[in-house]
Image 1 (tube, one colour):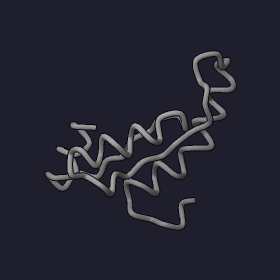
Image 2: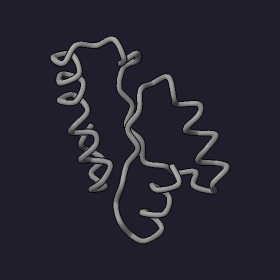
Image 3: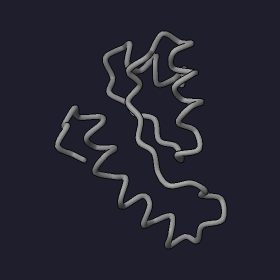
Image 4: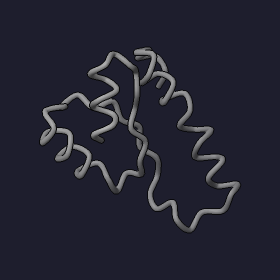
Length: 77
């Protein structure tokens, strides 16, 4: 989160990707850093027991949202 805030402060588009388990922690950390509008993409939790194919499917599903977050394209889903 610190790196994301630093990149964004330097005008470099970035986004945070995590599983849904970390929504509250992301919110708390971003508020603590004074970075309330953290661009974040969440994928289904849990991920640690997923197969490679399942992880690829999660990544494929998240990619349009990641691209939208770093380009500012709200239509990205």
